[in-house]
Image 1 (cartoon, rainbow, N blue to C red):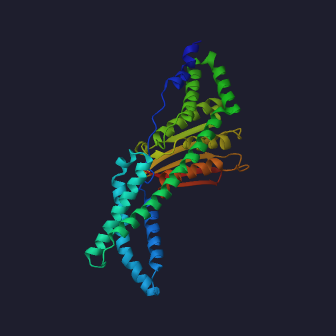
Image 2 (cartoon, rainbow, N blue to C red; image 1 turned 30 degrees about the horizontal axis):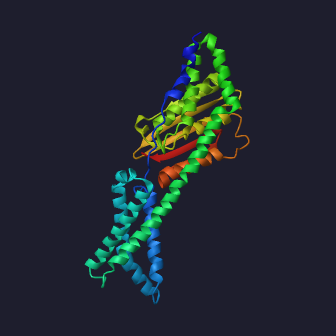
Image 3 (cartoon, one colour; image 1 turned 180 degrees about the vertical axis):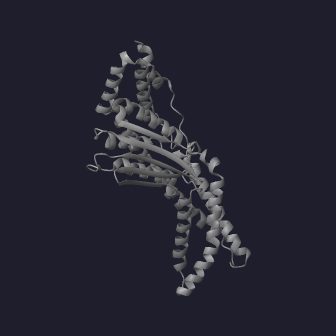
Length: 344
């Protein structure tokens, strides 16, 4: 019995260094959701400001059209500049990023004012007021995006704590160790592989992986988890993979797929004496990646849970990809389907 080899799967836990923390750009102006919100916010602000001094509805519409002619190009220039400078800004501390966004807003305000002045619609030209308005509006937009970015922290922390609890919950840990003990004498290589998979699950739960990981990393983690459960359930767990290599580089929040796969095992395989089929597929369709996790439910849907894991997955996808992601979970004809769409 080769005990040192069997236990070697736990050694990298202590040896592997923690990855360095990465600074993320809190106002990613390249996202479609950010562009839409920024344009709508500025337009609403302009519409409200145009009410001051307006004599009637026609006067208000005239002011709104005039000011929109300067504000809309300005906000688009701000978004274009912030998107183009995304990488340099991301290297700066957060306060410098915020200041950079405000400075770009002031310059964008001057640009919008200059356009109106060029065609003779402003006399005198309010350069200082335009720069101040641009800085003020961009500061409000950046502040909103900073608050949104901070919302990622509790969501990610909740997911990490939940996954850590799932790894060390008694029945999962004890069943895995009991399976390894049973295999030590008869199949030591299989027992070693089982413990290595368990070690990798603990490592991913404990190590900070940053804001996002690749789909390939997430599917590898899901494979580790299913390998452990395969030893426990044997032929009752029937796994089907259909992975598109073109989708491997898509970005996901860390520890996102594994709880969905765990739900498939818990609600599909575990309650059924005949087991269930679990299928994981990925497919790239143009600039979109579609991820599907399905499992048969031979015993019926059963008592519905609280849905906390699904809500957490949905919230974290929205925080990372905003309006560019979609999440659906449906049960129909004895089949439970989770469908995720994310940008490449």
